[in-house]
Image (cartoon, rainbow, N blue to C red; front, side, top):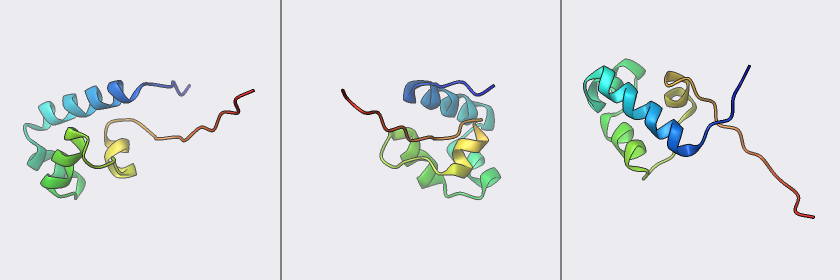
Length: 68
């Protein structure tokens, strides 16, 4: 069953994936992404793509909440 996680937890998952891959370049090559893009995502400069999120087992979902 899907579980909601925080942005911080998603960042932690990315950090673990980078550690397991050995480098941003290695993870990027495995996913067909540029190393600079992966580094930018890690630093919070750019948003993660669906491909990168899928690689860390995450799917982004936008929620809209009505304030009463």
